[in-house]
Image (cartoon, rainbow, N blue to C red):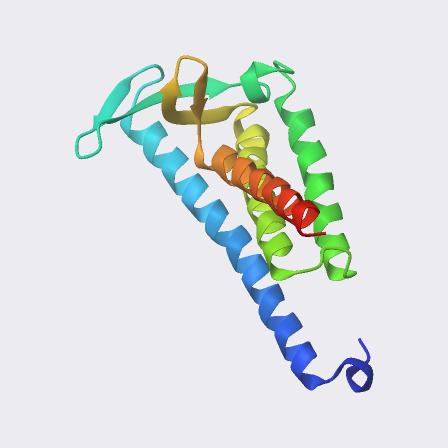
Length: 164
């Protein structure tokens, strides 16, 4: 990075953005892993529990594939794919291909979520799900981080298309 060309202020902002990028990944991982560990320790497989204040239901399930149990039994292969994609995204960010704070936050959420489920797949060849939304939708925080990152990037693109 040529400091004389872009200026000291830009270098400081880039380092701050990088710090936040990695902090978001770490925070997403910590929340995901901690909640999965808590569920595995507190609920037997298939057992449910209600969160009293908000009336939300938790259920301890496992998924040996991907969304909707696609690729059933391919957990570790999916983990390797996610690790490659996460490394590629981090490399692209470092090379300046992912521009703007908003896009970097979205990508950090997707990486953190992807790595959270990859860790489960590598350790257990399955993913722990527990946030019950319906018979067709039980997920974990890693799924929510990935979904939020993708959704926010789509919204950003829609907003940009209307502005131009």
